[in-house]
Length: 124
Image 1 (cartoon, rainbow, N blue to C red):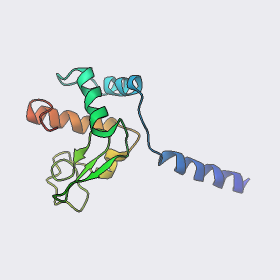
Image 2: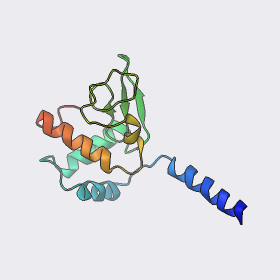
Image 3: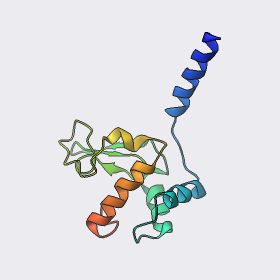
Image 4: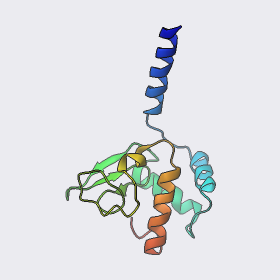
């Protein structure tokens, strides 16, 4: 019995760490759960996620200037999250690793904060 529980635990860890590629309707539902689109059309949000990460929650991109872009919307570590490497301003008040989660509610909240602070999707 202990062996089965241990294997189940390991399976859960492996599944939790897998990359999530969202389907359009799934992402739209998650955006809706986060209470609106902050004046940006749902279509623009969908296009942004596709263009930035191919709707991949685990995407990371190392920039030449030493910062890294994280997750679905490729949020930059220099300004919006802390990765302990980029001397971040951490305006999103979060660790960059949180942006790589398949649970994207925090990612959406950070993106909405970015949109509100800049007056649109100019950050991209």
